[in-house]
Length: 130
Image (cartoon, rainbow, N blue to C red; front, top):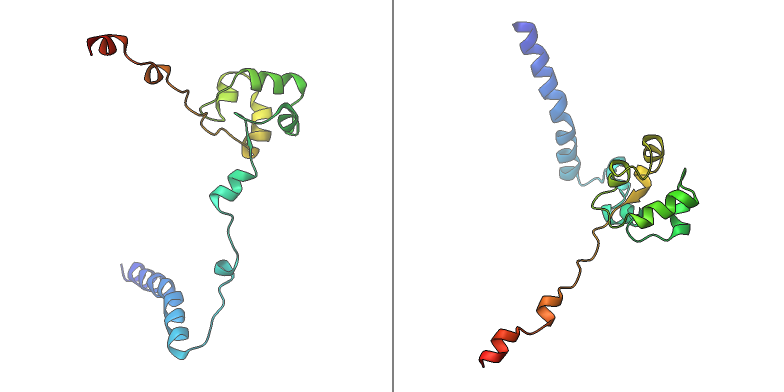
């Protein structure tokens, strides 16, 4: 029991050290550099911008992906729109090994919703009642 308590005390003390170091640096007025904070992480939108959208990419863009040739890119285009990139696998457009190669390089943005023609046409019954 005493050994467990000692280990817990040490663990808590080690966890508090970074916070103590930051507060000491702030109070002394010296600047500290944090390597993790100085690196700029890629934003989600920036990372998504680097990916190929399987719902809008051209045949040539799709063929740049590893394992995607003329026939598979044509199948991808013919199967649009996709809700998720995993649809390529579940709809048997690509096999598991090809999907594993390209899954981190693709994205499936939602397709633009189709415009409703019902809203564009006036209701004939309502217009006759007037």
